Length: 183
Image (cartoon, one colour):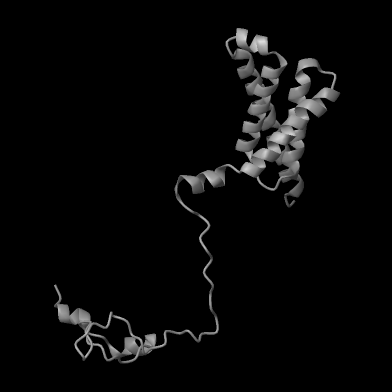
């Protein structure tokens, strides 16, 4: 094992390479007046006059559960997907003569279009919006049947709406990727 004094020895070549000159501080961290110098060399410029300066990027990751949840789920995207699912159910679904499946086809069609025009894949938002609209339309469509069935009809509506939303968003994203991919 080497002696401790060997670790504290500074070679002059290393000092010249780094650009650090002699200081008034001793090795043990006290200056000649007997006070502590804090271990900082205040007389030496550490390259602040360099031609290239890099600006540090601020950290965007806040860490923790909120940071991860904000990355995984966007409220604005959810609101857009929800409005799209509502428009698909009531406007597009109302125009299609398919009976009870017209709302599901409307959700699929509108979220397909939103998947094509969106820049990011937002499956969680699309699925949540589809489930919410599916449950809402089945409960409002037949409150009595929803209560008598023990809640199975709203569950079926939520599953159908969620699947339609996810399939529509997936197909739209797939078409967008196919159209924008380099050949």
